[in-house]
Length: 285
Image 1 (cartoon, rainbow, N blue to C red):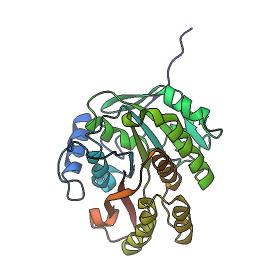
Image 2 (image 1 turned 90 degrees about the vertical axis):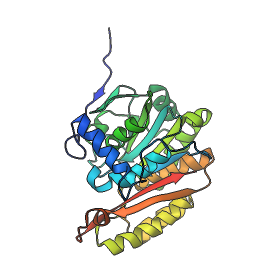
Image 3 (image 1 turned 90 degrees about the horizontal axis):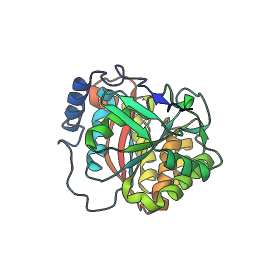
């Protein structure tokens, strides 16, 4: 008896990004040359150092896409074959830490396969990881990263998606260490992606101030201080556990620091003077 592989259809195409592939490709190209983007189209030049991963925002492309383009430009010359993606569970559905056994994720630009070997290896190294397709069914945090990856990567790549309803420090470090252990032998072919926005719905100047303090701890790869600043300043970064998990994994695999490529708020980008959301593109090297 054959078993059908799960097919994860787009949940936010036509909302967070265009559902028409031609329109989507055109928008992504415009985000790379945007004044808040890298200013040029990928690929970037040959990397002169090991790049372990990125922090990337996940709002609608018109708000955060140009900031996100900075990270994807930097990794566009890497010969990655697998992307381990971690993001926050905005809907609170399904398991506390959820991945998938296999199947495909679809976007208007085509299909991407889930790599069952990687998700299985990570789950074996962590008692808190569950296989739960439903947890991924509605959320945008990982989905919006994929069209960028499809744009910069012409050959096939697989994904290992993880979505977190639990984002405490113990959960994040457990998952991060499991990720590092599972991919230590193929880090040259692996890209780590933490999906998160930063401060939500506060005045622009306050968002810059709070997020600036939190970003300093990310650049230092200081997990404990990251959680301390997060709590002390009440920074409403939605994917804080995802950032911490990828920080943990990158550091365990050899990263020594983070580099801020671009920070901007929705207000900076759109000119709207009301409450803003903060976005950052950060490289782990």
